Length: 144
Image: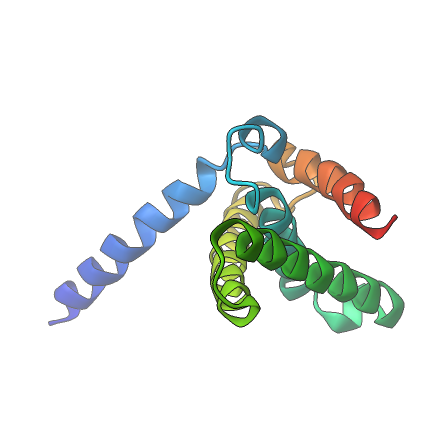
């Protein structure tokens, strides 16, 4: 029974980590992605950063700013989705929240693997560093 449990855990974990390792920079994939993707991806990155770092280490001011940016990106992505496909804004927000959660989980898996292998969650990760830079630009553009 224990072997079955271990096999099941390995079966579900290995593809998840492999997918996180295969994340390509947003700058590379954003060009051909759905119009909603860049803002959803940035919201997912911000959510993962908040979850990884935590409120106490991030500090109240940075936490509030990051959370506000995350929420604005979610609303923007949902508005773009709703404009493109119709339906209700509530339905678009629900789908966007699901997408952001999935993206955040990929970033978190990447951070966990980085920390386990090099002792830093995101400091030396080229994809995360590149995405943080681009997401800062996207966020600043949306706030103008």
